[in-house]
Length: 392
Image (tube, rainbow, N blue to C red; front, side, top):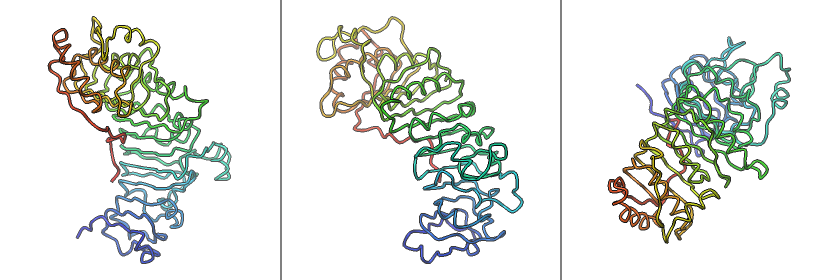
């Protein structure tokens, strides 16, 4: 008999106090939002491969509750910056703790308050020479030889060493969210193995507005085999692009940031494999005033470049601001971007712009025949949540 996934809800937390895995020997998946400490012995949790659990339960459960070697999927919720990996350690794990079968790991921190290396060493009462720096707190080296998916939210760490425990792991999908000042410490060596990347920075201080764009500029300049990327930022500081973009394998890109049209085109022009482009905020800048000068209301006489910026993009989604009223500068930027990407076959825009863009396509199709092949659809909202992976 194989048991179905089991969820210990808040309503049953008293019945599960303490919850003994001795009664769940054939359980494969366990989700515990609220419960008392787990009890186990060396033979009780032999079938458990998927575990979603709150950090305070792990802290109260003691060592070896679920051996690291057998877990395939692990998600830790509301984790303090210095949560312990001890609950997964066996008695023989002295110098190294190996999650031999783990393919997906998610850590959702309870707070993104600043944590420094000095805080880390203080938490374990050790000096730099005698310990491996990790996420969480552990004196041992924690390794993940089969880890493919990694998700970390509310990143608190302001030091790159926290990420080095994942260097050497075959991570293919990475999602990171937190304040820019913390996320920027992600070790860029992780980019070398990635297929998918989602970076979401929030709550930047006014003094660091320009740093996000520098961070993205640095990422785009790193060698990477990423094929799907979401780059998201909550502040209104324009994205900039490096002279050389090294993400030649990128096929899908979502930009949820303040992106001037010319900067967007400079980026897209260096992505030869790009097929799907989603832009959630687009705006003009000083350089685009010359485009405005060529316009007659509502879109004007736009002149396409002699050489297309890209012919590989087939699907284009543009979700702009402006509320219930279409803004002429935004509309002009959208139409100009469209002319620069003659390979587009499916175009999605916000409802308020849909009629304007349809009229533009009809009026310009004679001089720009590629426009006649476009399927135009409208949308109310493009979800900001990355669809890349869910740990379940």
